[in-house]
Image (cartoon, rainbow, N blue to C red):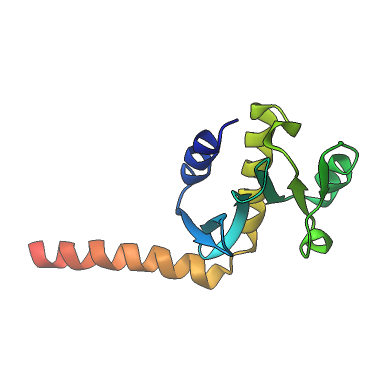
Length: 129
């Protein structure tokens, strides 16, 4: 999978954003929380994502996948090359990471965004009447 295809896929998730941090690391976030890190400065390009405990254990058996430095204890994995997994497996892993991160977003943050959207619609309706 190419860097451009991976970038497009990560940005296809609801409320996903990207930023360049820590030199040449492309960070993908949802509600300010990381769900994927793309190491553009390494050769080959690396990918870091969050995994469930079961998936983490499974991935540790794959050559070219290691616990992510500093994040491994939180079940993040580092793919030392994008070709370690097939594109469909890579997309599935990124999707899992996104879902795990979204599940940890506090309810207050989620409800604040929903309320903000509702209040705009409500005030627009009031203006019409």
